[in-house]
Image (cartoon, rainbow, N blue to C red; front, side, top):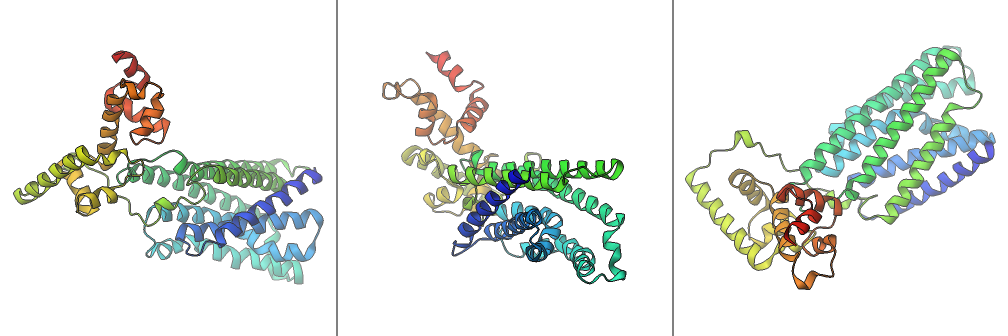
Length: 376
């Protein structure tokens, strides 16, 4: 068992170090990248701590004890901040989230540092750090982590939907790195908590329960590293940085527009229709609200307001509606006979098979293959 643990720990340390170097080499880091640096530094110390424990390297145990001890209580707020930083502007975001890290400082001052002092100097007043009370605190710490992970998953789902209002193509791969990380971490910490609760009732296992969590963490980090290298925009989804999320349309409370506003929006609508017919911007798979606004010589805010308030639609829905129409036109053309359906979809601006199938069915009521059969 020790040989297996040693192999995984060494591999994990190397992989985490490579990720850290990749992050640190980025010259102008955005907030999400800075958060990832802190996250992987903590994971690096955790892996080093368990490696030191396995080989009884006392000086390394002492060096890594503090960052290892505060990692569980810190990772929850850190992942919460990471998800928010991907979708919201950086201004004051750290200050607004700082309150979530207060328990980390209290834990360090009240438990971690006293534990270090007691272990080194045997101060009687600090003997409380080795009581059952501390075990209860650790279980609360795990519960707090689970709560933060659930909140982060809900935020990710919410922001993912709202981001569609600004981008014409949002693929699963753009979010899978974060979702897999959160769900897997939730699974690891839940198992860890369950095993610790079991130990409190039935006694300690023969093997160290924490080793299971560390092994699982290393496997997760290794998988995500591979995933990040072999997929686009996964590890560092920079396309989301500094883009404020558009508000969701409330169809029930549609604004009453003044006659001047109606005239302005009608004019903008006519210009959109002309641009779409003549330049076909929807064929650009990376088309954004900002790019279309530039073509129309207007601002993205004004364009978004017109779509939401006047046409009662979103940029995402509008562009993909034209893409579906383009696919329908090309399906039976001789020039595209050698193309499969997804190949045609790519020619029309789609870049995800899943989103293409979902959007096509939403617009036509048929799957792409069923639609092709119906017109053949």
